[in-house]
Image 1 (cartoon, chains in turn brown, orange):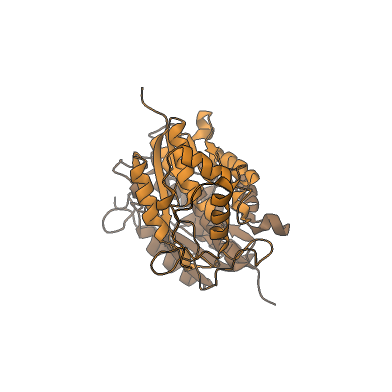
Image 2 (cartoon, one colour):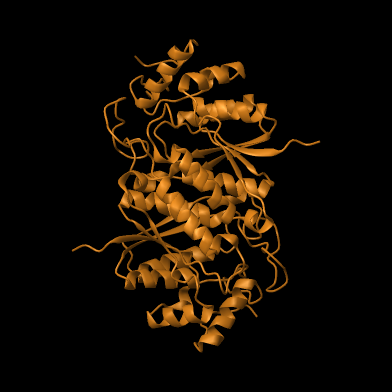
Length: 225
Length: 225
């Protein structure tokens, strides 16, 4: 019997690598989807390719969408990446509508594949405060996806799985470690040095570093300083 | 006083050209957004450029997203475009999640621009039966966009305008004619000849032809036969 198919959003970061491992463990044939969106830290795409290969996914697609055309984020525009804890509210690294865009593509691919399951590694505990990582957004998107596709005519719905939604970063790392995720090939830093080393100062580095400490797992990340 | 900004989805077809004219008439400064998604009828993009120029939009962006990577539609894959009226249910020209993807980009750009208004020329009377043209999808997307962006933190919401939603094709044509839309530079055919002429046989040609007849407006479209 063939496995059910799932589209898994894979950024190349710690969370999405863990999410992919969970999808595999839950018995899905995984189709990994990444985006070259003009991100400052596009080294993560090379990580995504290595993670996808190691996980033996059925297919990995990298979609090119250059969000630098309108910028508006420290990740896609000429705006400095803030240091961890230096800002209140939604930080400058927020990329407008990024997860809405990513999930829309995932739904399109899922519909073509005949998949009803989509995995996304969003987390609303140890995260940067992005609105498109919250559970109410994910639930709303699932309904929107149902109404905007054949699902509504055929009487079924997409399941948007967010298995990390309520986990602490340390819990994610412990779970991934149990599942054999090699975190050395994942990338989290928003502002890496030219040689690819993590900056150690941005919000994402900070969350990652603290996560490994709290998990009691050695951090394999090379930091610039 | 500056005009409020609106992002207007512009395919280059009859409906979106009319929708842009309505947005202008309603007093918005318009930012037109088109997509090169690997569509068989990419001549519509040249039409979109000419319509955007004629309407004197503030900016026109064409986003490249190659949906041929997964195909699954007669518009993006090696699947024949059906003749008008030849199929039941959702037709082969349906592109999975297309409007969800297009609207997601529109929301991203709107957020960067500080615009709260988005226009889309969907229609649910004289249309091809695509699920992502229906009012319940548009309403659901608006809520999803609110929850996935700064709007939710700042206490406002996006207005997704679909001014053609309940108009017949003939009413759209009459409205656009009043507003000075030059339909000669719009393109509707899903399956144009190599010289760009409309096929005259697909569902979209059929709806367009009947619309001009019912509106009592001369059809400026060159048909192949």
